[in-house]
Length: 388
Image (tube, rainbow, N blue to C red; front, side, top):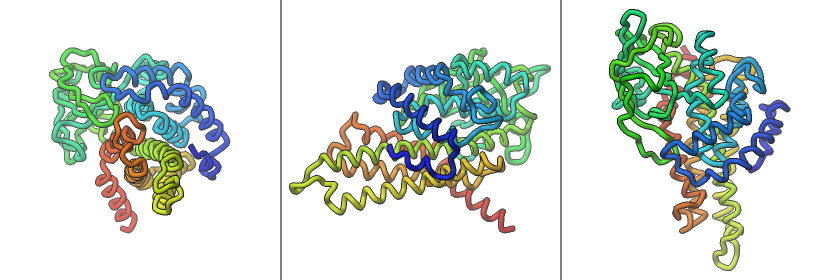
């Protein structure tokens, strides 16, 4: 893996040291999990607990021991996901899915909620999950139908959630439900729902291309104390959007790691594979492919780490930059992996090889956490708003 990009001015000495140390950890731990497709969550759970035991999860929460500061250091988080994406996709899944769920608590939780949940997360003892999407409600997340009605000191939640990470395994769900009718997303609230409460049923596990443990959950009259409301009533959707905005550059970083892995595999294969009496690396058509792959990777890295640096330097909203990073990096990674398969020739479609696995795994990132189409809409709306 080429580390020259760490010399870019986006990074501080802390990040360079962090990338080296975490890269060494990932290189020692992840190879044993590389072939695991993760359907039952076992491998992801093991990796998550190892991340906790070795204190790497501390970097995911501001103010934790070992973290870069008192706010989310997005550059560290992008470096983590890039390194995990390079090493084994399931390693990235193990880290990113719980982190997406714990972010809203870190950003908007009360002091009591943080005390109850964050230490257990950092120790690898409390597994959180993010429950936003619903059957028939994908990109239009504001149209969700799960309802939470007030009943004395509780809320009673009924509805179904789809594509929920760690469905049936999580200790707590950050769940979004409609508490009252309001225009657009105004009536949506966020809740912390314990996974073992009566009325929660895992309807189905959903087999998907990447090693994600996702499923459909049914919530039937699930009673949740009002103290588990996250933030203000009716302000749940901004919580979800803020978490996803922070998350999107890291999605780009994960795909960047996968693209780097594909390029390294393609370079090695191009030197080994002989066609017409010479290694194919000496054929200009192959050289052109390798050059295009390298350009896409550097362009993606610039967008990812620009967004992360802007967040860390100013703390301002990075709506457009986050969407650009996620959009370009995920699309570019798909193209890079595709070209790597082409360079491998017939071996490129043989099950079990890294490029075949990457080809299946990278595809989902253009859909999860906001499709490429939605990212384009976010960018365009931000541009138009700026010109008013």
